[in-house]
Length: 217
Image 1 (cartoon, rainbow, N blue to C red):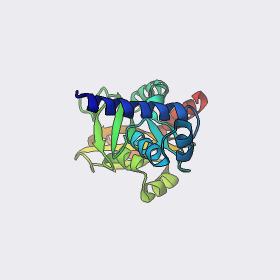
Image 2 (tube, one colour):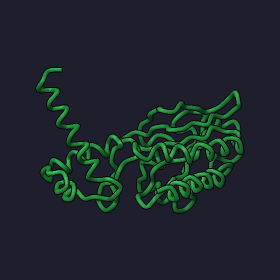
Image 3 (tube, one colour):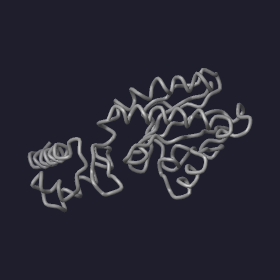
């Protein structure tokens, strides 16, 4: 790497590290980031928004910045894993945990169904928003929020992949929706709809994860 390019990369990393140090475990405004790091307000704000896109920071409804899911992911995964295994065993279907990354959603955990015919995607899979029930949930537009307020879950019936259905429920903290618990299945095993068949247990699983995350915060 040429010296000038290396110096530029190092400077960006130094600034990003300074922003992470400035945020710590608190919620920090762009102006406070600027004050704590010595960066100009425009630079601090621009870098913070870029770090939101990559999951290093998350932005609250009030416009402040907190550490993002890349730093709480292990805790989220640790509390979610046994809950998803239990959900899979209870329903017989694939249970997953998805988070938002920019305009995509990323699968953190997949407890795959033991049926030979099953819906599955490996951890690390990325799909565009708002495809599927988790994609719609994590995109969180007004229509989805209204559905959540009414039912507590979002379902998809063959909209992303013909023959497959899913239902997703949100994991929420004071910062809003941080993840989606998704149960995915072949429509051949659905009797009513994904939500009618499994809505209550998926919402219950999401609430258990949510409570564990809050207790560990």
